[in-house]
Length: 490
Image (spheres, rainbow, N blue to C red):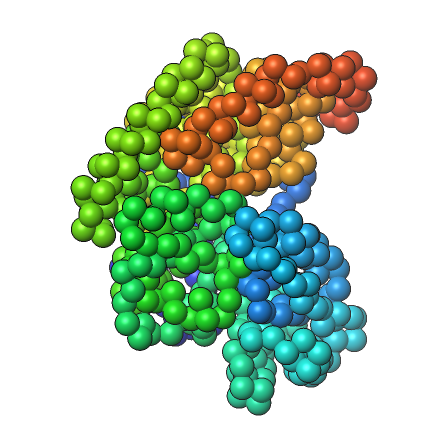
């Protein structure tokens, strides 16, 4: 039974909707097997740091070109949102935005008296002022913990403002305490977009395919061209119009199911846009499956087979050469769920041994309910088990302990700040923020070349290891890395 209900303002959280967890330690095969029959989350008796759903909702709304975003809460809750203004400006050339405009980010700045008397009037006034100052096409209002605790009726305030001003004012319910799986913030943003912005299709367009993604480079235009189609990216660099008529696309593909699980299923269920069920194209076997699934859905299987043949002819010799260079090397991965699984597939394809992984959460199933969307399951089947597989919500003290024990040849990361710990231990570390960089056959070549380059240039991290001070004591480094998972530290 579908868990997507666009008639209510708040999205169902991942723990309830699809059974997501943030605590597990074992092997990847064990996790995949357990996912098919239900997983019990393990709690930590100590946590060092956590993410917040508000920032995940923010990155999917702030990067809409003609939008304004209001954080309804204390100003500190908006203190990290400026990073998306930087992201927008730096990455906009990758998406063909020649003249990126400043992002329109505001805070209602709730203070102590507002928590007593309510912040509703302040929110209503803020919406009017933002409208008058910036003339946006759409205004998103992100709720914070403070707004949720005091019980402001954000939905009614947004509806009244929408009627008054004649433009969409979308309430996004993404308080940090709502879910311990902070990727629920993605779902909250997409729930609001699907409820208030996406319209029924005027006509179906066989030349448009939705791509739900972050802000990576555009590999899809070249991939879709042989099929006579072009990408409609959601949501970074979208406009209100391109979002509104994403219902007209012939299909939806995912660059990262962690991000787009909810919206992909909503577009199919509510607007009749079929989702490509194959997991994203990381690794040769999965790229084959992805192109074939795309060709089958579009009724162009012959085109898919031709693309696969041409690309393999071009890139397989380079991939084989990289395998020779990387044979016998070991690596450890730390990243969000879907991209972490993608990097493990890349390692397997290039012949490196995955010594382990620290993955920030785990979705036993995606919203579409199809097992073929599970890249971790596909990777285990293709490349074997991954030992030391840790599902953790960015607990860096666990990561340092594991790296200190395993000492892999390479650390691969997706998020800033994680590679530091490998470098301090003398382990070469590679961070590439573009999630499209390692996609497809050509992506294996690009990423493999960067791995070789990183391994060959390790002098800096070796010197750093000799001089760096580790903030974690021997007391902790001598314990099992997961001593606080489902129990107590010694």
